[in-house]
Length: 155
Image (cartoon, rainbow, N blue to C red; front, side, top):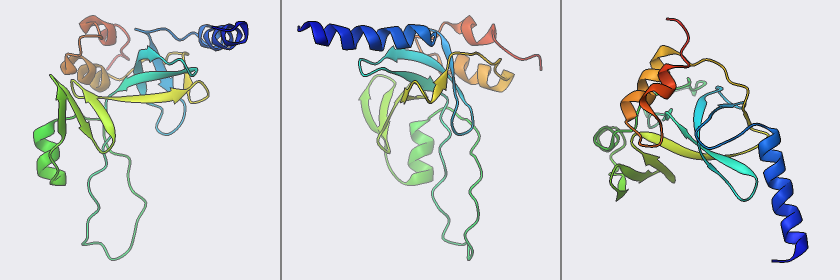
């Protein structure tokens, strides 16, 4: 490895550490709805991959005459059987509790999504009891069962 390669790698790692990201910590997605995710990986290109409770949009309805602004779907765990019924597409099973659907990977009902450091924040906001319950119900082996429950807003 060339010395210039090391300089790039160290600057990326420095940016990640400076922003406070670490595997096993929670992060806030600063674009879109502002979902909370669990840091699954630190990416070599300088971003992070988060485990999130997915917000899948239902297929478009053909009954509407006028288009309207789509509402933001509620978070819900990915369930292959439900996806098959709603979308008419069978998700591709990759491994135990791992599926591919619509170009995304789902593990234990959670979606894996990569983000650059400008799209996420390590400044933690307490999560809702609903979201904490969904993370706990996923049973994802990377997320300790008590982790989400310890960071819940009083409800």
